[in-house]
View 1 (cartoon, rainbow, N blue to C red):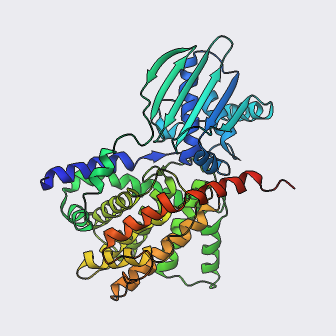
View 2: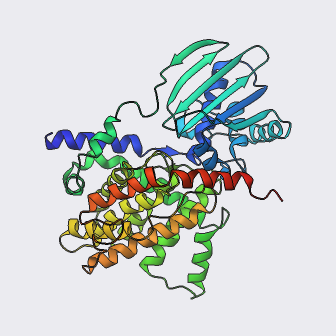
Length: 435
């Protein structure tokens, strides 16, 4: 494949995987299915019956749905069906009104919304919404991607059927990603025409806006706000490391705490988008780099995050803010390295694959901010070590000599090694607090 064709594919993949979303993408996927079903219904919604995969249930149970102040899949399904914008994709809930939110909460309280796990689906990402009106019934199914509607049925008549067997055929995007090297991605970021990646300025703007909102202390666990208070009281130092951590985790606080602002996602996740972009923004601010250099670093971080995620399942027991932060590590290393940035990036990614790769995903919740905080801290630490020619060696654990093989090993751990972990996490979440 010639270089221009390779670059065009990368641009297309970034545009596909770096998109805005209002709210955590798993409950939003169900809200989108419900909104689409309600649009096809053509009359007032009286009841919503939803079924989701175990992984989607895990990721949707505890996270606050934006604009509602309420966590969980029940409220997501309710407000999606009652007032979601089916034409807005991942921003389906961006225009909720107080009346819709109040009605949605009433529907949930009155038992007019049900949500259960569909045990027999092979799709790790599966969201099904069946909405009932006075005279009609519509069923909508999403699989494999948060906005990938594959089945629509109204009153027993199939309107759309694009269902496929899970895992049938190799995803062309993933197949292409696996042909790349880090050198290819760095070359792309350094030399692709700026006009082709200018859209990434919006990623910086949206995620930095979330960060500023999180620093108000109104959302989630208020980690960014609290750490900033500690800096102001001289209990923490005001250095680049803490600025990266504070500004990034503040965006996650706002995201998981239900702020009605979109995040620019990466690989289907707002937290991954935040972890891939905000650290690069902070370093670029600190260095006072040119707009071109800032944009190229964002392209590098976004593409490395997508590349690393290409070895992972769609959803799993592995916390993918780790691989997103590998993207941030690449962007930060490229900005900070005085020479041989590719070597610095490779060293940093190798070190990261030997540090926090065991961090589990126990569902989307306010506590995700803690994982974002840990991931971006590990990324910056790995970059500092790499700048001083220090890396975890390929003889250690999951770490290999080549950074590309490190990422592949992390993917094998997530896709093969953590399946039982994923099952156990969901069981614990469903059974806890019963006493």
